[in-house]
Image 1 (cartoon, rainbow, N blue to C red):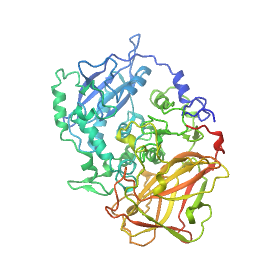
Image 2: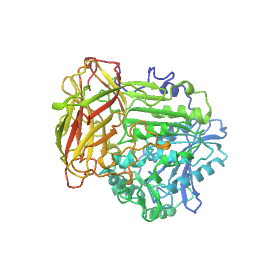
Image 3: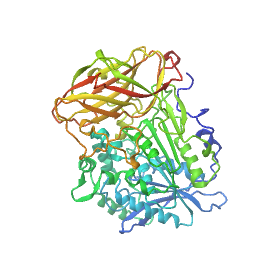
Image 4: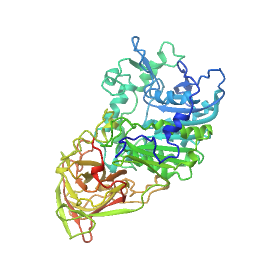
Amino acid sequence: MGKMSDTDAGSPAWRVPPSRYLADRPALYDLPARPFSLYLAMRDGCRIAADVYLPQATDGERGAVPTILILTPYYRRFALGGDASSATDPSPNAAKYRDFFVPRGYAVVVVDVRGTGASFGTRDSFRSPTERDDFREIADWIVTQDWSNGVIGSTGISYLGAASCFLASTGHPAVKAIAPLFAVWNTYVDHLYPGGVLLNQLAKSYDDIMVGLDHDRRDILAKQPYFDNPDFAGPQPVDEDVDGALCRAAVRAHLGNFHMPDFISEFRFTDDRLPYDPSFGAHSFSPYHYADGIRPDCAILSVSGWMDGAGFSNGAIARNLSLPGNPQHLLIGPWDHGARTNVSPWRERPQTDFDVLAEVLRFFDHYLMGRDTGLQDEAPIHYFCIHTDDWRSATAWPPVETSRILHLGTDGALSEEAGAVGEDEYRVDFTTGSGVNTRHERLAAVALTDYYTDWQGRDAAMLCYETAPLDEGGEIVGHPVIDLWMASNQGDAVLHVYLSEVEADGSVRYVTEGVLRALHRQETTAPANQNWSWPFRDFSRANAAPLEPGEAVRMRFALLPVAWSFAAGSRIRLSIAGADCDHYVQLPYGRPPVLAVMRGGETPSRIELPWQPSRETSSETRGMQ
């Protein structure tokens, strides 16, 4: 099998792999002993806290440099307790960007967004439009500084990545490149309401973290991975705030911040609006809504992983497709949210060997510094195939245009023939779940490294269809699309659809999944700023349609994208459930439906797989975890 790793070393997918570029890229500057920090006054007088790290030249001659702007709600820097360990880094959220870019000649500016850290103001929204307005003013300040050469980039994981999109969407002419990492494009469907169904734990877990941070509740943070260091002692005041009085006043103001469980429940449909602000809807905190503001000369590197939450990979792909006029790059690896773990069951170890920031550095060197990086000679898209465990390149998305259609048949068969007309009854059990070792846990800051270890046998409570053993191996690369006809005895239902590989020895491997609320089954035309390559719906109340009990309806929707190689001798299993109690709200409330899944004739339920021959065809050639 060779290496069972996500390393790019020796990969033919790049002319110059990112790791080799990094090895040949000199770090010529020193880090400052500490940043200088200050308050920036916004248009309404709100003071925003910023840290500035400047590269230190050994000969004292640095000159003006480009800036990487990091916009975070998770503290630009912690204050440290009096007995703090000297090894404690006060900037766990920003240290990796500081340590990577400053020695290579970039200024790094880290900002507590409005209503967080040492910044004043309150948060009136998740990714507030008010924050977005601040970002332009922060950029205005940067370009007037004598250490700035007038060029700005931005990056970061998750919230920070979406903030980089917001920054670019202000149209500021200095913003020449952004690298949103593991970041949404449509907050509603990529993050909180996948398939139009609210995630039942995410809003609360997010709120717990933010109350701990925004209210300086160290008792709460002590229970949170990544923020549980006992040396952390609240947000670091800026330099001028010698006694911390201003910082304490800012934290008091944060007591007025919104709470996610309350806030997100106002947007059950995408056309819902705040009753006190008819202009404010789910679009207001989604980067796609501001796409027209992104200048065509702003380059974009979107990075995600195949197990990146409940839709962040869709966000990366949609961003790539929705801005065709911009210089675009796309990287998707075998990763969870933030690439903390290589999720391949055939990996050597949980840790990732691919250095995402090496690719980001090459991207910024190319577009912000104008260095000769060779990036123009590389393919614009790179993705990792699980099971063959190798990197691939592509010139466009989707990278595979051929497909294989498998029909749901009698006795649980899944085959290329449509088969006889019939239907299968499935009584939804609201206690059915996908467990707590899934793609969803990382978004709740769970330090998970082993994924779907209890998947074997879990689909016994689901309606399953399975192919005969594959004569030849094959790969799915992209979005599988389920096209299912069903009827319900209730006025609503949710379909959770899972794809698995059943290996020749009986091992069952989770591959991917998709979800759709029946109320949102109507497809619509994708707008330019949400250019999906998979079935689109707008999740609006205007297009919502309750079910007529007993009436057959078509549910056509995509599973989350993946690149996965099936071995010869394996079977492809499709599993259908009506609930995932571990992650999604129950629908319809207290009324478990009885579903009729229809097959053949005029209701030919099927799944379309983006399929190509595999580079490996036998499970005997593969190592095991």
